[in-house]
Each structure stands twice: as C-alpha cells, then as structure tokens.
Image (cartoon, rainbow, N blue to C red):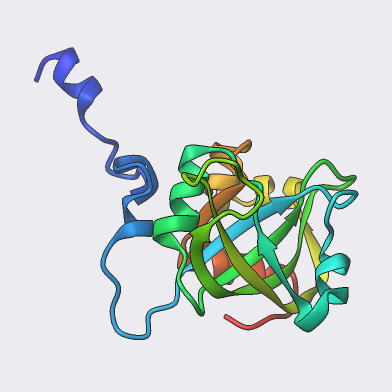
Length: 175
C-alpha cells in the first residue's frame, strides 16, 4: 500500500461522525429509537435556569448560523431525542442539564433567510452535578466526543456510550 492510499483510508477507530461527517446522526432509525445531542448556550444569554423558568420549561432553539449545526437541527433531531444543555463561555464550561426535543426542525423565526432552522426543547432534569469540560477531556472514553474534537460547533451528536458516561458523571438523569 502506498503512503497516499494509507493517508486516504479512515482510521478503524474513527467515530462515525468523522467517517462521514456525522453519518450516524442521519442514518435511518429503528422504530422508537432515541438519539442524543448536545447544544451550547452562553449562560449570560440563555441559561438552563432560563429554560427551567420558561413557560412549560420549553424554548425555541434558534439563532444557529452554522451549516453543520443547522443540518443537525433540520435533519437529525427528532421528537423525543434527548439533549445535553452545555454552558459555554462560562467558568467552568459544563454540561448542566438534560432536555428533550419536543418539536422537530422548522424554519428559524429569528432568521431573515429560510435556510436556517430551529427546534423546540423542553427541560427534563438538571444534572445533580455539572460535568465540566475539563472532566470530559480527562476521560479517555470521551476523547472522540464531538464536544472535544470540534469544540466550536454549537449543536453536536452524542453517541450512546458518551451519553451514558456523562449521565453517570452527573450522578442523575434519564437515559
């Protein structure tokens, strides 16, 4: 095998989202299958406490202006999927709660351009203990998590194994 061929072959340990731009997030679903996601918000703009205080503990997740994140909102997230709520630009940055998708992707009402999408999220539970980015980065089993590898993306898929690990780290929450 030439060096050029080896350089083009995917690593056998590469997560699905690296093999095909997060292909697993868009794969056909089994009946009743729930997928997992992570969304980021700066707590001084909109915090998990704000979500808990919102009517029906629900909000439009809008304002996303990145094509990859938009695709997750539009084509990946489905009603019933569970979502980690992550406080970015905070000290410390951390996953603080769990939400549920209650309305699938629709054109973002805050956008002038109909290419942008939003979903509606409802708070499910605050984690008993925030799970910090430093803690996540320290766990070898989370090294391939999109939050770690593609840190600037505001909406990312979370694998079932990553979900279970983080829920356990937060000491509470539904799977």
